[in-house]
Image (cartoon, rainbow, N blue to C red; front, side, top):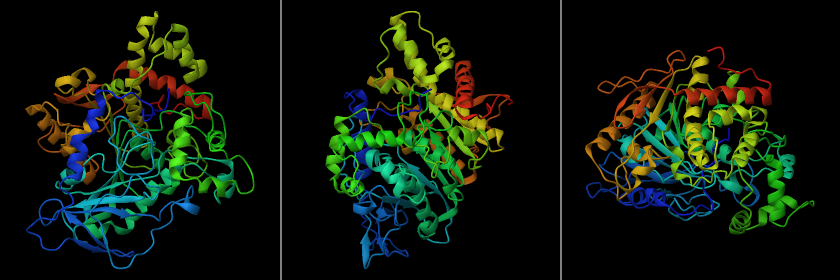
Length: 548
């Protein structure tokens, strides 16, 4: 099955556009930049790099430090290189405004904010600005298909820090700046690798947190990473990376992961999962789009192209995709193989999906049954008959419903697969399914992709039709998530029981208008059996869960 990619570019604007607009950005940007009248002096911390002056977002104890550099600007000679440590500064650096987003093309579902290639900044919210506080830490990586997005798109900082956490969010390089592989870059690298610069940025942010978070009241030994969509996908890649050892002790993955499927390789073609190219081949094609192909000064010329011209070339060639890849260093081999063999980080995970993920994706289904079968052939090769049997269509008219059902189930299968795999290696996994359908004009979308973030952040679209159920669910979700960050177990007195996943029971926790245990549906298990065969065929690994 296809590794998930969000519809970031060239999508028609739909009802979903309003979901990320006034409420989220307005809530984030309004009110965080002004100190309380009762607090005469803004909060300050002294780091090895220099002094930071932040702001207050509530009481005198609630401090935010925004736009904090965690690496040197990845510009000029540092474009398409691993991030370098941040340089020291003199005097006091203001940290009361968000840093620029990474360069990106417009997305209809996401409000535009200013971007700059100098984008490696993070934000911190804390309720106890003391090195002795030793509060648990959550580090959030945003979604957006690794093509768009920015750290302030979901305002998690204030509500979660008020529940006893230190909250960090970070920007990282995206698209052609974050995931551009090329033979010349590989040759230049001491690790013979290229393409995963966005993942290296995330690792650098986690190194920065480990080295500095105690100044903000956080415990560097109690760090949980959290991602939604592509952010969650990236976290599973980090779990598969030896470079992440010791940097985080738990993971929350919402609607995304990378261990249940196959990922594009830097130079080896893969005949599954609709992977049409290799990382380096995609990079060479894009270099051609930029008018630069070969020559001794090839990298110098590529690095000299202005960022807006790089984006313009990308916009003209929507077939070029920039994805995290198996590069032999950051991600040493297929994550599915790494997880199957138990070589990933052994940490507790909280993972799940939404019941109607794909209703907002603007999917374009195959038109005919023959095209539908060809789609499956490109996805799972000689196993495609099994996939067609799981989502059958005996007429052209029946295809869209089955196609949508499949893309919804991909997310559920991914979370289910991750829970099974982590459980197999002795780690607790907590599996959920978010089922809440809002009232009003978006009710027909069901529990769509990203909707749970409104409940977690307690920030809703301005036209959301509230009732008592959404407030109760919002408190419930925050309670579970925060308890997991604090203890590695979401169980919390006063909330419905949420046991760790067990293979023999195959249960998840439903989070919706009702909260309680449910059974993993059989069609999700069918996807699991098919994909295990695909992975085993492609990597030579044994199907990991057959013995469970």
